Length: 152
Image (cartoon, rainbow, N blue to C red):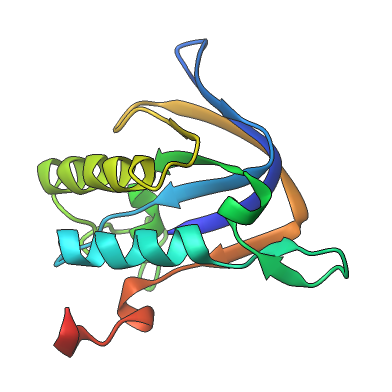
C-alpha cells in the first residue's frame, strides 16, 4: 500500500467520477504473490490506526478516526514493478488478476467495516486519479517489511 495524506482526492473512469474524498488518505493498493486475507487484515489495521495527521501541536499524532477523515482506495498492481533489468518493468511479483481482485475487494470490505467513509476506484479500469497531497506525506506500507512472514 502507498498512502498519501490528502486534502482532497478523486478518481475518474471514462469521464465519470467514481470516487471523491476531502481530508483523508488516498491509498494505492497493490496485491502481491503470497498475499492473503490475513495480510490484508493486518494492512488495514495498520492503515486505519496510523497516526499521520497533525494534532494541535503540529505533531503527527492523529489517525483517520481522530480527524473523521475518509479513504479513497485505488487498485494499483504497478506498485510491484520490478525495474532491475532492462527498460520495461516486470510485474512478476504482483498477484494474478483474480486473486488481486478478490483481495482488493476484501480490503474495501474491511475498511468499510471500520465505519470510516470509503470511496473506491474500479479494479483493473483505466483510472484518472487526482489528489492534493497534504504535507506532503507519502508512506509506503510493505507487508513483507511490516510483518514477520513466519507469523503470516
